[in-house]
Image 1: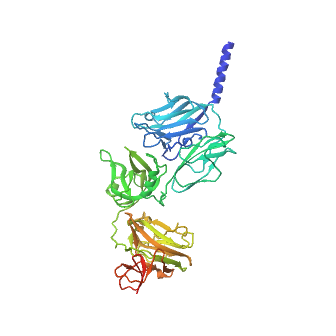
Image 2: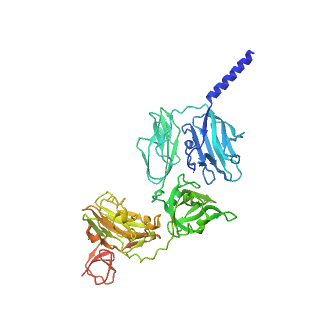
Image 3: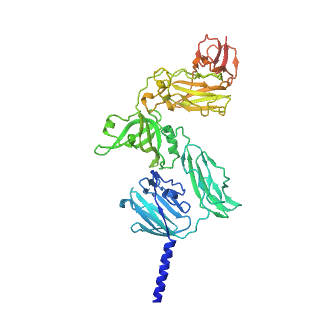
Amino acid sequence: MNKFLRYSFVALLAMVFGNVMADEATMKYSGSTTANMKADGSNEAASVGLNDSEWSVVASKGAASNAPGLNKAGDFRLYWHADGGNTITVSSLTNATISNIAITFTGAEYSNVSVTANGAAVTGTDGNYAINSTSFILGNANTSSAQVRISQIVITYAGGTPVTVVAPKFSVESGLYFETQTVALTCETEGARILYTIPAGQDPEYTDDNNFTGVFYDGTPLTISQNTIIKAMAIKDGQTSNIVTAKYTIVNTTGKGTAESPFSVADAMLVVNALENGATTAEKYFVKGYIVGAPDFQRNSDQELYGNCNFDIADVKGGSEKLTIYRAKSFENKNFTEDDVTAKIIEENDLVTLEGQLQKYVKDEVVTPELKNGFLISVVKCEDLPPLPELPTVEAQPVLKFTANGQWASYTFNKGDFYAQDYKGFRIEYSNMNTVESGAAFNILINSAETHLGKDWKGDDAQVPNKTAYKNAGFDAAHTVFEGDFSDFVATDDPATTCPTIAQFALQACAAGNTVIIKKVVFIKQDDTEVLPEYKGDDWGGTAYTVEEVTDGITNVNTDKAENAVRYNLAGQKVGNDFKGVVIMNGKKVVLK
């Protein structure tokens, strides 16, 4: 009897202490957006609800096109591939022993998961898997393209060494950015130092202050202006934290992917090229372009509409650099209807803006840049613009010095109107500007012929949305070349305010006394051909400037009379053989008497 009581008491103690020592952690995605895991080797524990100081969650896409999915419905997904699909490796950073995991699937058809621990497959019963290891690996065990969908995993574990030095944190999360980022490193462990490395694939290492790999963080935020991987760990009293990783992809686009500043197709290509094969952006972006070819409204075998449409867009009508729009929906993310198809809601050459995710889709080693999960934001119907006279151009332009006299007026660089869509942009080469504040000395003024749509100027009440643009940023004494584009003038979302015709491209004066030398103004066509527009000259009375021709870039001043060369006056206008005075011939200033 005593022996029975003694064994019973021991069993009770084991049960009680076993229960006290055991703990649980729940792995679950609770985000409000649908995305993919990064699958870049970084610890993504926080994205699935685990403490990233105690747990490591590392995703791999394997040979599949996409990394494991995080769905806003509340599950994470493993994708299959014949050559090896997605995996997720979960490890204890405190060396705790994982005794069991309980997996809840979204349905029986999504439950064919593989679980590996200690290098061997683990067989589960009713979603429970005995691990008895510090880590386990999840995979897709299907033999076809079925998914594994998991709503949560409850991890039962015990033991382990408490983490005494907390891993550093980055002030900016890993991700895709369109401008330089400033990243600070911090650590919650008081008195800890942070050791980091930037070269990809190199981990920080620490033995002592004479034997380490990396740079000690001095508190100055890091400037990240290009694609960068940072790895960091904290150190205190000889102890080190876990290594954490941040990956920054920097893409320099003209647009910002917003409703106010959508991506061009060229911008979207830059973003897609920065992605890993098969990857999709976590965020949705706005993209604008012309439809190339006839839209393909998807139908089933009975010719009933699915409600989505496939088509390509480009930055110019009929362009060769195209972004594939995959299964786009209509406005407000609604299905396309037969009425939409009949009414030709979208057709070739329409200028469309869509919102969706960008994807680097790969099939059979062929990369297709795509926008998926997208829908229409706006459509500007295609219209054949009436032909314009060819923009007058010259072989050489005069080099002109402008001195502002304190009145607002302009000197126009184009002698004729032109369509914005025919040109990629412009370049101005200049020198001797006397202020470094953009727009303080001079503005670049661009006016559309349609600005007032034929209305008389009567103030704001009569003025439609103005398509005047002041291209100032970067046009200052700190630079010698200024570049820009005409994309804002191709069209707007409202056809009534579409302003495709550029009537004036000019230099506008600001405060008196400012100076600048304009060496060259170049317009760049869509085929990359560069032309020199013939200058029109002063507008608004010509009182804003004192204009002088200078010899900057002109090597000789001759008094010889040339008989056959083409001649231009100081405004860059072609003149006849009977013209007297100073002209430009063969790139040189010549005095004709």
